[in-house]
Image 1: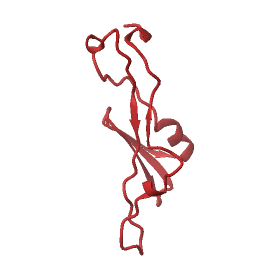
Image 2 (image 1 turned 90 degrees about the vertical axis):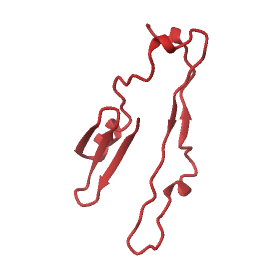
Image 3 (image 1 turned 60 degrees about the vertical axis):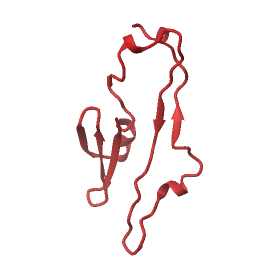
Length: 102
């Protein structure tokens, strides 16, 4: 699943699309968008029957930015080239089936 954040220059507001719920929340200010954007609610990834008791698991989170086109520029701009200090991939801490009440 993915979350998409859109900014409207005209409305000076944000919209967030949650693919796991097929829902869009609109007309958000920056503070609201910061709180709501990373929120995942009860997304069923796998059944507990498919989780092995003796294996360590982790979640991998990946971020990306689509290329943008600015007026007056001939080529699209890839903002990820300028994202040097933050890696767009991260992993959660390891967990096992016993970490949950299953």
